[in-house]
Image 1: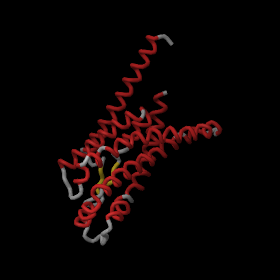
Image 2 (image 1 turned 135 degrees about the vertical axis):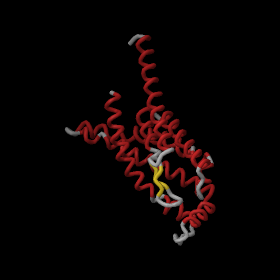
Image 3 (image 1 turned 90 degrees about the vertical axis):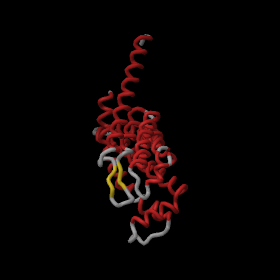
Image 4 (image 1 turned 180 degrees about the horizontal axis):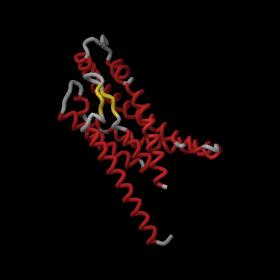
Length: 216
């Protein structure tokens, strides 16, 4: 391949990468402004699928792309906390809670996908219907990316705002009869990670399989 062809190929890759990043970032912004992104299940806790574009971007275009989309996710979370405050939104006004864990989703998701994919390659080659298994690495990455999001946010919340968050949770849920900050943060709130992880596994596995096919 000559220098001109290489240059064109690089430009084509750059355009595609910017297009994917722009599209997924736009989806994140739209989701943040609609009920699609956050589903409230009580006055304090929301289920979210906002992390899914971050995971998809990281798998398809690499860790820097994932980190950038994660930054957009975190920035929208920060703005949402500022413009529509609730009793616990004070935690998301801190970028260490709202932005940093979301950027880490992209990095962790990319390397998880690479690690899992390598271990599935031989299995896929040995199976006559191996194509059916191609969604598994992406689905596993969806689960890990979700846990990074939840673990990062809840971990920073516990480190920085444990008692204050527990008091806010109890004031919004007076019948909860729980007073341990650790139990509230990692037990009650963290339990939502299971539903989010299952949903992420299904969506990421399906979308990435399609995108990887188109990419070829």
